[in-house]
Image (cartoon, one colour):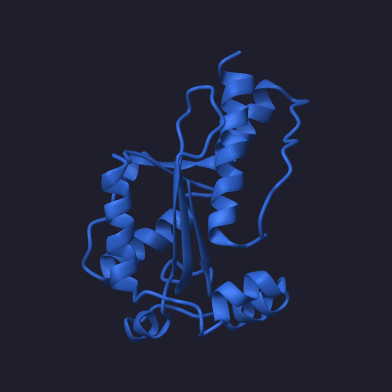
Length: 180
């Protein structure tokens, strides 16, 4: 599962943070490993990536913890190229063949776009971008009264915490609905 926090909703949005987790859909509910990177913003804007005034204002309305990850210049950040290479390495290390996202038409599009901007290969083929939202709808269709009852942990709109929460929900759906 992967999650990006961005400064726009456009396909070429500046990506502020990337969070990813490794898990298996085997009936267990366990995060096996995680990846998190804060990205520098200047190299992305210099490469033509987009910042939206509306999204900037939206971020100002979020929790201090979430805003801190986006805007605090004292936190360690990698330039986009090296953050993406680190994500590639993480995917290779874990033999990632599919990327799940909460709306693959957002996170996966942003990532594909930035990988292209920095002349890097996206870790998986487009056929293997999978959508968590679709899995939720299918779960609700099969079990209309299914309760997504797991308490979320961490900070809302923190890329790693959101990726963990989405993966845990997906693993529970798989265990409770698909395997039953």
